[in-house]
Image (cartoon, rainbow, N blue to C red; front, side, top):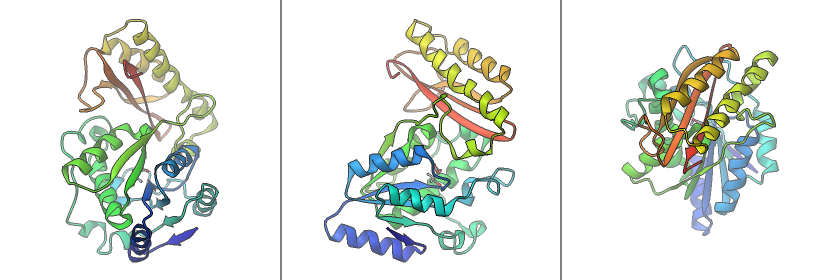
Length: 285
Ligand code: PAF
């Protein structure tokens, strides 16, 4: 497995793979890899020839008050995990390689309007501008034919799909389902930051999402009743709800009534660890 730290080396590798007639599949990550990331890599292997993974903890998607410094860093273990999944190349640039003038001197940004303002965008202003910009940069460096994103970050996947469509990036976006711990907690690099007590308590998130999906299957259509039930369950477990919303899966607009396809999306804090999760409801579920 090759490990590249510079833009030129990573781009050169992709160009030579493409020239040799091999398609490039890309899984962007911020490291601290877990089974969720590995499932994206496995999906990626099914979708093309040469799998490239990036490991870059992107500073522009974290606000100054957020957990950039606390974000787990496990680089050597991440490389071993990539080797184990048959990754052809890892691109692991430094912040100065990605933002040579410094992030405050980055003057060009990708902003995917409307889709970026709600859900996580409401409590993390600027977050999706940082995400869309770094993903656009990574696409221009790795030159993938296909890129794979996880459905846990549902809003992120919708935003990236729209960016690709609006800006004519020659890349196909694929998504892969959420991977869960045996007790249902969605896998996340941030789970490692939970105290044992909060780790246990946070299982209330998925239990309540599943209960909401069950109620919808039994005929409940009132989004407010569903979100209230989830909010109460998370609150009772000791979590602090950021948002619980039923939204349209395409536009991410809030829905009052669950008809056809809908997404129930949650963000909540346990201690100072912010977790997100979601579940498809109704016809989609
Ligand atoms: O989902 C993530 O890990 C990040 O937001 C991404 C897509 C790698 C961009 O930094």
